[in-house]
Image (cartoon, rainbow over all chains, first blue to last red; front, side, top):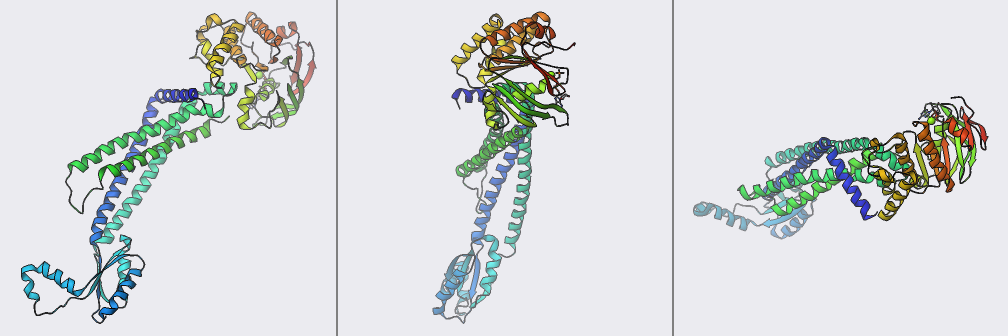
Amino acid sequence: MKIRTVGRHAREGMRNLFRNGWMTFASISAVAVTLFILGGSILLSLNVQNISLNIESQLQINAYVSNVVPVKALPALEKRLAHLSGVRSVRFVSKVQALKQMKQILKSNADIMTGLGNPLPNAFILNAVNPQQTAAVAKEVQSTPGIESVQYGQSFLPKLLTIMNVARDAAVILIGGLLILGMFLISNTIRVTIFTRRREIEIMKLVGATNGFIRGPFFVEGTLMGLVGAAIPSVVLYELYRWIAQTVKLFPPFTLVPYPLVITHVVWVLVACGLFMGVWGSLFSMRRFLRV
Amino acid sequence: MIEMQDVWKEYGNGVAALSGISVRIAQGEFCYVVGPSGAGKSTFIKLMYREEKPTKGQIFVGGFNIERLRERQIPMMRRHIGVVFQDYKLLQPLTVYENVSFALEVIEASRKTIQKRVAEVLELVGLTEKANMLPRELSGGEQQRVGIARALVNKPSVIIADEPTGNLDPDNSWTIMKLFQRVNDRGTTIVMATHNRELVNSVRKRVIAIEQGRIVRDQERGEYGYED
Ligand SMILES: Nc1ncnc2c1ncn2[C@@H]1O[C@H](COP(=O)(O)OP(=O)(O)OP(=O)(O)O)[C@@H](O)[C@H]1O
Ligand SMILES: [Mg+2]
């Protein structure tokens, strides 16, 4: 394609955008709103995930070893636990270390322990690969011979994860619907352009313009709508996220995913989605309304 | 140049517009297509530039087998054909010059070619002076000359015209006819569907008469033959 042709398509495409001002505005708004929600959801879920990771790092499984297990059998038991499916890490805490920790916690009251010997068992501290499987992993650990009892944050974790899953599913459905609506609005706007320019199109076909040439401006029109629709929420989310990161004071485990990196990624996702909506919208309308 | 072999055309609604047309038109011929209203003349014309597809039969135009044409070849085929309409089909917001140059711009001709060719054809149709006027500022005859200029600008080997004088008074019709004559003298084939009895009878050319979708007469230096 000649450079002059590209220039012509760009010019004509822009002109089309301004000619149906209101429809263009509606389409771009729909894309912008959709992508704002999409971007917002991504940021939100990344942060919830981050927070739950923070929490989860404290959500370990404590497996207490039965007193009958001899010390020399402990490495074998550790190996066995490490090989259970879904286990990310295993750390051994001997009864001696446990007592030390206990005394540290009790501090000045540590002397209440004297005379008791060491009542604490040897223990393994485990983490699941997938936090959602903590309960399942704990069950497996429990049924391992040599483990007397198991403890983990049973009550809190499943609830959090269920809420997150429901929220995610709802967001996916909402965003999916909005994406389709946006693409439909873009293709409808282009359909109107095709209609208002039908005489030109008729002459173009008559004198032998190629299909690609005839479609060029409409393609530009759709793509621009998608890109502008992506640019608006990108800028808004970028500034908003920066403002939150700089202004709102947060404490662990409630911390934000670091600001420049994540927002850049989200912006790229939005631009890609906007581009996709625009390209798809124009292809769809041309397929239906620009047959030779 | 143009050849039809046993061509049938039935529209989607079941109307049989053409029933077994076979005809051959040589390069450089000037040919009228006549017949009563609804006979199939426009259909005959539309098949030639593939506005419509035949239901059956083969059509060749300038070396292209219209039937076998792939979608992407259609534009290339149309660059060899100039089409002229009764209602001119000019773009109202564009000037005379722009209406003509449009035809070359959309096939990505070079700027130089466009300037040269548009000037040439406007000179040929006698509208150089009115190049910057809009279609609505022109008379019907002048508008049709713009339409012809646009059809000619890409140097087609054939001009196909569907009642080009249908909206014009006798004087303007004569101007258009003389223009076609000059174009034909330079070797361009002309096929012209018309109801203009005077024209056909005074400028004698080959006459193809169609009635109810069939060729009923094909005559060198023929006459119009109908009373309308
Ligand atoms: N697009 C179409 N769909 C269905 N039927 C059509 C279509 N175009 C034409 N016809 C029918 O085909 C027949 C031939 O029409 P055509 O336009 O070729 O006639 P014509 O000879 O050009 O007539 P006129 O002299 O009035 O222009 C007519 O019966 C007409 O009703
Ligand atoms: Mg007709």
